[in-house]
Length: 387
Image 1 (cartoon, rainbow, N blue to C red):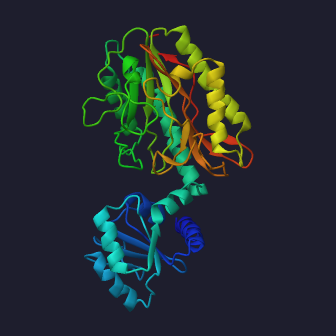
Image 2 (cartoon, helix red, strand yellow):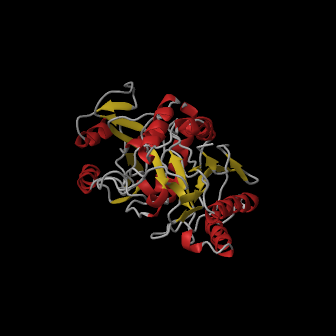
């Protein structure tokens, strides 16, 4: 693990030097985990040259020459003097995640001549996974598959969507799910995933996920809402692959009875999009091109009115994944990113059929030197639950 962390520190330091920053201070949990392999209460400081320092408020990690106990960040400059460390002239802070008060407080503590955005820098670095991170995602993929294989056994006639989700969540925890679904951004509330059935799939959500659903309470308007799982209903299962700190993302469609011809045609179109992207994607492929492939195939099949929603249509067809479910890159028509080796992204072409529900597919892909490697492997056809 030490070599893993040192690799990440070097990547950050290289990016810091490109921004002419002298220091980077991190305090958000997932960034602390990324650079430390654990979550703690305090701050991680990385100079542009040399080894990092930990300033902890609660000593839950071993105290060493690099680890120092503080009560408040105002004590950090004293440690800098004792350690003969130069205060940074340009300091990177997590501008996209810190509260305004905390950001101003840390600016005052360090009195740097300039500050920059550590959130953007770290998210860009996290876009390229290390071999260890990829292995963690492979572990999540295997357990993700195992849970999805058990979904038919979770179903009982007369169920509602939320009851099916509860049964799936139980299987997830038994297989080792961490239970906590980590997402970047303030409008990304979700528990352990989403199930959309029937007409609820058309309901738009204020959250930045591909599809919506009204949820079971106005305080969390997303996903299952108590829809009965009746004959002719499509059930889209998009439950988290959080079996390690590194998530996989996988969506599959189940049905009660048979669906309409339009639903099956749309589902096959989603599989065609996935196949076409698998065939052409490789390092150097523009992310915007992947979205355009999905859009063109959709239009050729006259399915544009259903693509990525109906009343509200998402303008992306995939996203990076890792510690958080919505990492970079994002597969949008406006993206300037290109695929690079060791990126991992979720591809999710989906369609919402009024009165029936959502159909389509989502899989996690690793970008290799020669193309794409699909991480989770589970049947991609619509699975009828009441057979």
